[in-house]
Amino acid sequence: MIGSIKGKIILKTEKYLIVETNGVGYKISVSPDALSRVKNPPAGGGTEIMLWIHTHVREDILDLYGFLDRQELEFFEMLINVSGIGPKGALGILGIASIETLKKAISTSDISYLTKISGIGKKTAEKIVIELRDKMGEAKTGSSLQGELDVLEALKSLGYSQSEARETLKKVSVDLNTTAKIREALKILAMK
Image (cartoon, rainbow, N blue to C red; front, side):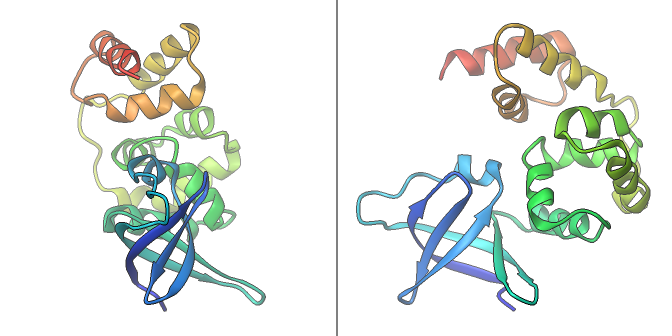
């Protein structure tokens, strides 16, 4: 099993990286969040990176999934242990919100958040909640995901795409109220 890879990025695409180490290029699928944080390699490659790796083996295939931190890897591995969630689905779920927000949604059994944001079905969302709720620990008191849904809807009504709104919301402080989150998100979007 490969546990981590450290090397140079020689190719970055929309879904994966090719990381070369000791003359071997590894194709590693990464989350959209990790891809957005990784710089494009200069001509000829050379951007140094270290990824935590999940090696997924099936009868006919061996896939590598990379993560910038161990917390993301551990959450990914919890997700793929839920029946009906494969590695690609788990990467998609990781791309919808921060791990903290996803854990909050699971621990508070907020199925509507999981289905509305991620595009997964109600039955799959229920499976995720049932199988992972106890592993998430106690949710912070007073924390509501409705505020985040309201921010996403406000940004979408202003003409931003679902993915732009989600990516921006990941950068907004979680301690703000809904109105302040919208203001901060608009500032972030204006800087692009």
